[in-house]
Length: 577
Image 1: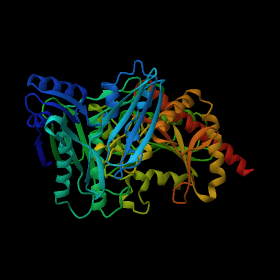
Image 2: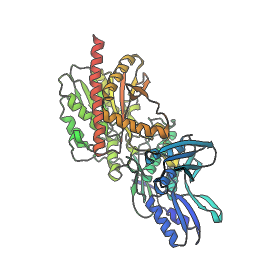
Image 3: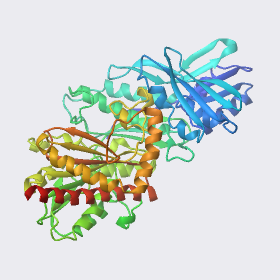
Image 4: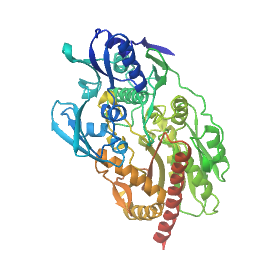
């Protein structure tokens, strides 16, 4: 282990108090949770200062939670700022999930003229009266490690009587700035992988805040995890000579571990060897699994199936486990866990395989957890922060997305080897690839708020399908999508969830861009690059789900596999007659 950096930071409140005087009437915006900001106000009052402490993160939403009384309000209208340094919808997105918080009251969100005014103008209708107020959203423009100009929330202080109206760098921002400076200044080798594990350990005294009546949580610790992980990945992408967004970059495993701890914030950055511990977990009834499975149960469930055992190794030395059942049906591949923080597909694949295996004609390969290194990391991260998305566990221990590995490079194929083997061994033309995405809002506040490269994925919008097919496979691919969506559209609970999430998404983000097939949202792309002529990808908002919602998620994954398997057999039989 090599320590690159360690520092303890002054609290934001101490920085503010150094600028204030007895008798001041002041406003401050900081990256602190509600409890901490209330404590700041109390302590300031004991020193003869009237301080209003507000959140620099999602200031409009926090104003509605903390300051705005909606008891007699019948309608809400918000004019949101638009900046030339950000996406036109940036502040509209930042208002999420206001549409849910106002309940049955009417809500209007409309853009202001492009300019430097960074205030939300709020109108509250109470009877025949309209009450107005401005909600300031402090931001700054800076150039990040990618060379791009970024409009990012920041700390701010106002003391009108003394003419103070200025930015204050918060401890939250300083942690991020120091972390980026350390990786930019380090003498890395010329080519990746640059490390086994690059670890950012942060102790942050900020509690998560659940939002009422929603599966949503505002979390500064989660936001810092996302900014540190993706910013570091972007840095090493550019250092590797690749374009931002390239999923074939291999820096190593980037691991931000952001834990709650009282006292002053702390940051430690270390280079560590790979963590080779297995993901543990008590065995659960598969049909009723309420959280992600441990490594041992995945292997046990596979071994309970008939057929041939298949394995390959990861760069860390963990095994990817699969099962091959040879029958008279048209062969398919079923996989889950490519992105290992999307855990419902692992359970769904195993449940479907167990049902399919009862037929003597069954012909399929199932790889329930393609990315065991990421799966182990997700378990490690979720132990301390179970409600966080943990995107550091998304990719492999090399840091890349196994989907994009070149099959001809045998020395670096690792986890993808079983996909290639399944296709070569069976000639399968269909790959059912089970995925998920965030079940609550995904933000990167210190790099512009909207996740760079993933803007369409930042707000849940229900369960949907992605169909990718070769040009020559169009007829059978579209027939598959038609049959599968007909079956899925009959599931009332699924369609009700989709309706609720779609309405909230579209209020804040606009039309989702889906093609509706039998009333079911789908995305369809044509490319001859895929290993399989037809790939059907599921996308369930499963990251951070537990209990009954998690059971619902892996049940939909299972039902999709069963519908696709049966539909594919019907299509192939029709094609052969």
